[in-house]
Image (spheres, one colour):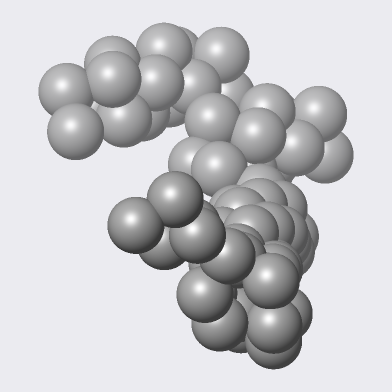
Length: 78
């Protein structure tokens, strides 16, 4: 039984099978991580939040300072 470790899994093509399995495992994990990060970065709309819109409207003169304060407090509640 001294030659039990030199069967097909260690000496023949078995190493190729294990190498392929490990390669597929790492590449799948890497692909999942890359796609997760890409969707986090580019999945959101490049729009502005409500506070930015209110600041722009105040800068344009569409709303007064009092209206800005009221609307800002309403946005903070949400």
